Length: 193
Image 1 (tube, rainbow, N blue to C red):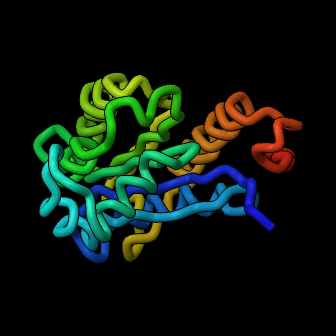
Image 2: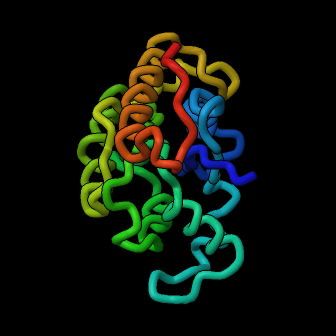
């Protein structure tokens, strides 16, 4: 029997293993697991395959799998550590490989980690313009976490967890609008906790 639940892809733009950014993405994806198919792409593992792929060249192997997962997801959770006031170059390269028409109208939950509260500005000044180019819908609530919000690369902040709850509620609303009940596209959503 086919799985009609929405597909949610989390992307960690971190090139470190282990990574607080990946821990943040895992925490966000866990909030969707009861009603969606979730998958995680870690650029720490996939960057070599992606960097071997040219934007105008053929897509093969793991690079093709990652690009197809991005282009076919019903919702993206995109996170990066903030380096020099922006997302990582590896994350930018991934989106250089994505078809510019593939994300139109697609909801995107933006998240980031950084060493100072000021780096949170990158979410509005860097992430939102990137996804505006793709005509995607960035959710109003973004999720930003500092180093002190983690314990052993796992999120430990109630405040950040509350922002995740709000962002996930916004994401669920966007998914309902994209896949109304009765369309045969997705199963009904459970009530919000």
